[in-house]
Length: 307
Image 1 (tube, rainbow, N blue to C red):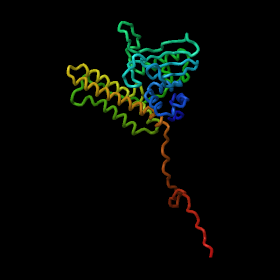
Image 2 (cartoon, one colour):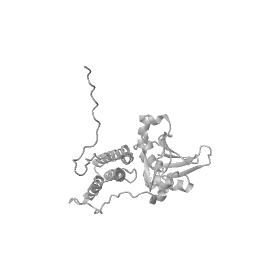
Image 3 (cartoon, rainbow, N blue to C red):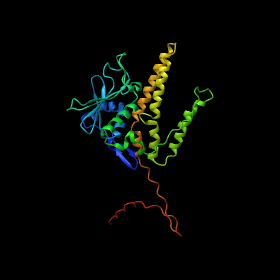
Image 4 (cartoon, helix red, strand yellow):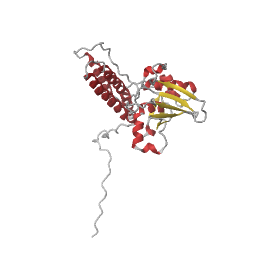
């Protein structure tokens, strides 16, 4: 994983992502798979300059985030009971701030986990469930308050410092699409984005279009996963048994879409790092003379045979 080449652009400056953890597990396939499945959390935090790692908690994997004052964040799914949801996509998230040498420093920064006690009051974040965007925004805001953001220029509190990103414009759709194809406006919007990608004049511009699809919180793939998951929940409301069968198929589709986003999560940075091919050499000419070919290496002189 080429972490040294991963960057984000802020105004006229380029801010590097925080480095990968420095331990021997980083080179192992199993850890790299864990890292990939949590990239929708670690990448936005690394863009803020925060070093992250993935470890095993009480009963599930957690993300540990190192902070400049030697405290750290623990971002975890509900630890008890263990969840059967896909790794990295639980029912909710819990983020706490702790300090290894100061037990009094303990703060629940975010908690959207469903309550195990139906009678217990839930925190306001509970309505967001496993949504990662709200989790990251809350962490960003709290760390900005504490002055613990290394890359403050990339903070959600100052998005105006970031360059404009091409927007996927989706026309308004009727509440109930008819069979005449009016629901194809979403396909038309994606075709328009594809046309703009084909006309991109640089790899950096092409990377900006990729961002529209692959952004881990608001990108098209992330939202498409949410759409199929919602469709699965709607299918469960049917009286027929096939409603549950359909909901499983739709849930599988949502998981595959999210997995695709995780596989391609560094494609934007890789595209931005590319350089265009060198143009083909052009023939040169002077007035009154035919065009001359570009210089090339001459064949080696053949040795003379002595008589």
